Image (cartoon, helix red, strand yellow):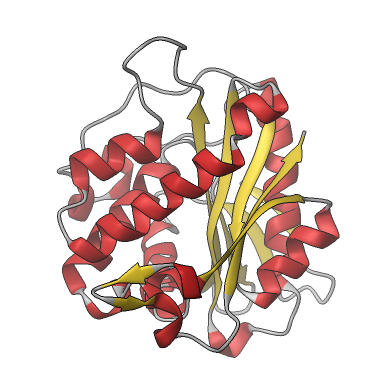
Length: 256
């Protein structure tokens, strides 16, 4: 499903489908994990098995049908991605947990992935999205990435804006849900999860790159919490030791 085309006509923004999913995974490997502050800070980029676990997280998000890619119109190549994961509020008083908590417990075996996911869980808890905004379902925008040779062309902004529009539209019903079988043999081991049926009422994001922070500000996201990578540690030293000075990340939200 094509949602829009860039002003110069060089890129289409499309829902992730069985046909373009392999290209989305390639962008994750080549343009997200090697550059993402969180991935570098927690050294996911140096651990092939941790990388595979993070790819599984994004594959699971794809099943919700809200994740997007940018495709070059001249070559058909997937050049940018953004993954959107629905999460329902755990029932008060129950033993239910958020999706990220469940994923961390069930699927994260490598220290790097586990540390990254535990940080994401901690950030979500501090932002307290569900109670702060009085919502039962949210959609997290995550792992926005553009291949280096296609940067500085407005793709990150276009992907983020379209993601918010698609999430809003999903209130009317499913957009482009996929099954585990649609993901191909490399993800055949994944177990199907019960589909989220509650319409999302909030978009959330962890913005760490300068470009993604600008996108969030442009779209009207409210910054709720700011973490310095100086205060986060992995393998005995601050995550900031692996990043540019002053690196930080923001937990932000947009009511829809």
